[in-house]
Length: 354
Image (cartoon, rainbow, N blue to C red):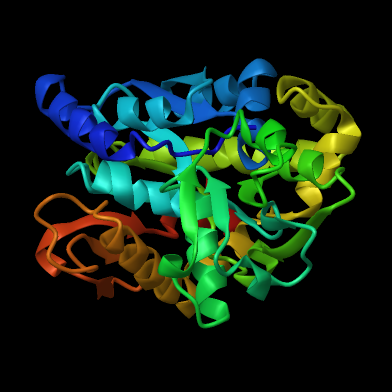
């Protein structure tokens, strides 16, 4: 399951931004045809299932629109295509929403807070069982990804910083095999890679996202102007999501289908769900997105991205890109709001007004 941002992220931001200028904008007022991009990850598998089983069509028909849901094998490419205007909505993490589309100048709104990582992402040491043992070690991870952020938060929790370790950018496809080599003693990654590495008897999990609950969010976002001009698109999206959540709760058939599509079995998929806070109830999602924790997390994430020079070449502070919250308060530049947490459509679902 791929949710990585490669070392090419900085160039991807620039490329997506230039494409956004070259391609027809996705925000062309009222329209009937919409495109949603998604990639393989435990919290996003419901989108593929909904498309395959007619749930997408059901809700699109209800609002007299057409919605195409396309799977991407390359997570970063799906975000680049959204940023370029080729798609109206995309699945991504909160961190990547700020560092790619927002940094690329595309005003983006959270339509669905689908899940958070509650143990899917982990720091693993070889033969050492305390996080403090990471000091001085070389750490293999996907640079500028959620794993990199988790490392930063972990180091912060024990009074260290990245200068106390050496980060080596490593493809997620290579991490499990790299761990088995003598030179690799510390890795940061996500499930199912985590599960594979932990099969090694000397692998010790020393820190994971249970220590930073709610900070790694898996979202469905949409172009703000498209959403503003086409509110029925937002209503259809939340209708699709919560309809699929209901089917998932009715038995194992849906989860078995999602597991197969993700390249695992029901046991493997349920293991990943066990460390994922899946918001199947819109009231819970609204409560989460309107909490003060989202504001605190956004500041931490923006600070990390600023430190890595991922907020754009002209960014002078962590608040260079304004982030708006459901109560209309803003972190950062109020005249440069490019990322918006919104509860409108999830609230409509919670109120039964779809």
